[in-house]
Length: 196
Image (cartoon, rainbow, N blue to C red; front, top):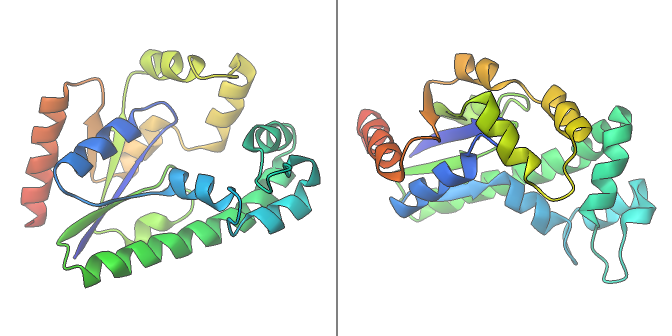
């Protein structure tokens, strides 16, 4: 089974490209969605994260991600502590996803991981793809998100490799400003080269 690592800077359009992979019948592991699940009631991260950020634990025993976002935005050391809890849990979920896909006889899967290169998750991938878009479109998309400020946008950008750095490290790049049809054709070409 082939593993494709999919990444992209914030606002690059990675979710859009992951949806196209899904539409083409390629199972996608979504690391961001897993983080959300881990912080919902009964999620594996609720207790360890609540120990670190007691103020983020809600009445319904889930983690308020907005409170955490504001805390780590102000303190990089707390961000590192949060990542030390979340990254191993997400990695474990990704490994389970791979095992289940192998059992189901899948020929190819996608690991959709925003910090693919930053966390070393690219090492388990057969190929890597980064999703790109012009800096202006990226900024417009991110600034349209609820609660986003210029300051927050700039500080998040500093925590990730830039789109250009990701492009240099990836085997392929996909421009999310293209049409769904064009991206779909590009993905089909990549899959053909992978022999799937």
